[in-house]
Amino acid sequence: MKTAIKKTTASKSKSGNTGTAANKTTTAKATAKTTSKTTAKGTVKAKPSAAEGLRELFVDSLKDIYWAEKALVKALPKMAKNATSQNLITAINDHLAVTEKQVARLEEVFKSVGEKAAAKKCDAMEGLIKEGESIMEETESGPVRDAGIIAASQKIEHYEIATYGTLAAFATTLGEDDAVLLLEKTLAEEKEADVLLTEAAYNTINFDAKEEDQK
Ligand SMILES: [Fe+2]
Ligand SMILES: [Fe+2]
Image 1 (cartoon, rainbow, N blue to C red):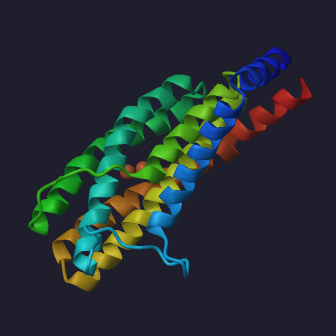
Image 2: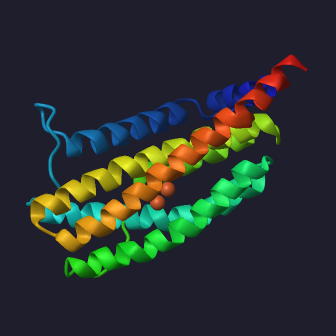
């Protein structure tokens, strides 16, 4: 650690003013990036492509969750591979199968509202998946990592519950009855996954993880 600090200091002193100028440029760029989206009053300036009505916001949110579910199909097997409790492995693998169906169900939702299925990167889900990976890196394999995997998975499920709840409410307002049924079906599955994860945590995993503290 000390060596790393020394190196940084050395490179800074070698580059002298240039380094400082570069830092200033980065800061200026970062500030410009923030201010370009925000007006003097602090309100966010809309992009030219911004949604004008609830329908557009609904479709945009569908694209977000479509990306998120596809990302989960890739992320869940890694979580299952790193879990050690059989209960947890089964819960994750079962939810992987459910998630694959949810991707297909979202395609039905797009179809039911007359839109082409398209994915748009969901920053929130990308962050939640990254957080799950960091938890795995920061824990030893075993009950403690299992508890961490449950924590990360529940954050993901809660994000999905909030998203599908909102989407179902938007679809209700828009009179998209077929979409409401499909979205509520997925919402129920996400809630069930959350309950199963809570049960897995309270039945054994958290207690086993606590035992590790006493070793
Ligand atoms: Fe899902
Ligand atoms: Fe889920």
